[in-house]
Amino acid sequence: MITLTNLQKRFGELEVLKGIDVTIEKGTTAVIIGPSGSGKTTLLRCLNLLETPDGGSISIGNHKIDFSGQKVRGADVAALRKQTGMVFQNYNLFPHLTALQNIMEGPITVLRKPKEEVRKRAMDLLEKVGLRDRADMYPHQLSGGQQQRIGIARAMAMEPAVLLFDEPTSALDPELVGEVLRVMKDLAEEGMTMAVVTHEMQFARDVSDKVIFMDQGVVAEMGTPDEVFGNTKNKRTLQFLNKLNTI
Image (cartoon, rainbow, N blue to C red):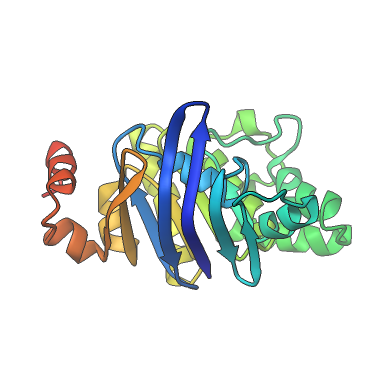
């Protein structure tokens, strides 16, 4: 489903991604962990081309882009980006639109789908994230956890092949984290392909199929939750997990 080959990204002289090779199979959840500054969010943003890689290639489904020394066509960017739905740290909902309108906006304006069809799908998604009764509320009337669940529904409304989560609970009060993680767990159990950058180690242990530990722009370790959390021999992984009191 997702294949990254020798993916590289620089910001000026700073090399943030130093040749990433990762495969995420269809219907699985990959959790990306690591210290701040390790390149996790940059990797995720490269996946939907919010950041343009400086080298290597990205394949999602049947769409592939090679970034090694050739100009990338806008049509190729649009085709690859259409495969992904992004859920951000800070919700990024339109403040002047209701919860329902936030979910409907993309399918109507981008996908050009009929309004009534989109409305029905949006209401189904609100039901799915447990917020059908909040359809007519504006973002300022919702808690952070509710706003993030609307963000997940909005991403799903575009019918992506892959959902990308950039630390989706980091801006939430602790008591609101669980409601967002429950929605994500349900999606994983339904076979949604997901790549998740998170500091929620229990979620990574319980829900992921693959754990990717990044450090200083490289994949320092990759394996199942049991391999990474329960049986790692990697000194840097051990150091990171010990600091979080997860082993």
